[in-house]
Image 1 (cartoon, rainbow, N blue to C red):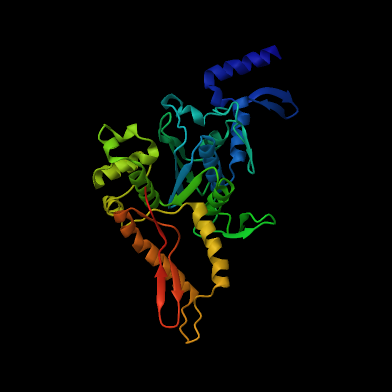
Image 2: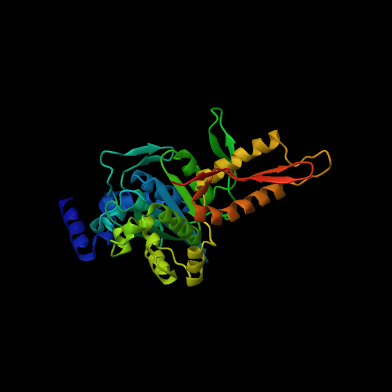
Length: 360
């Protein structure tokens, strides 16, 4: 046995740890795997679909203390790209590669148990890296939040075919909303997390363009212009605020790229001009849709005794158009829209009401 172990040690030194999967040959076809090989196999099993990656990245941001998490999704041929940007505690520079190693975690005293199981054993990011073409920290820093980019080959790691349908909500016996119908796609994974953690953090979901527009809008609201005068580089700001430092379209493109968001110059101009609007949080979108249905059933605004009838779908579309158009006025006069515009149909008129508040 001693000679066998010496031989194994010799082979390990000559070929490297990665080429040696067996720690001990037990005979009769049984072996004891090395820890690294056992971990690699566990990691392969932990992530079965791209949707699993979304959940793990969102849990990682939540456990880092994030209150806002932005998920940008894209796909080119078979390659699915995911960029997660959060305002959590961040990752020190010297740890940004090591967090993808097995059993590396910052949660020694705060292992988290949630509906998806245990989180905090130092395997989530390692599992993602083992199953993907790329997994890396794009930008971070202590106290500055984190940007993580992941690229998965969907021919090797599958995802649902329908990646555009949003789930429909229902309520459980306690009156809590949950995703009841719809494909178990990336959107639903984000939606289920957003509903579960609604009081902990807000999740924003969209394309790279939509997330960039949302980050820019949020940064403009939160950053004081005088504060920017004393900043030499956007890197001094938290990652979620950096797009607010952009002086022009070229600057916007550069900063967006440093956050893993690749945009064209035309897109950057459109965001700066306000023609690409920010997205609502996932929970806000889902819960808002849930509230509209009983309201419309209780008060049917499409009926009129004189025969004036407007289809519900047309009223909804009209309301959404008005809401989008109102945003330019809101920005100019520092107003906020309390909820979607109310459209009332009476005998001979259509009345639209905007309930507004003034920003501090």
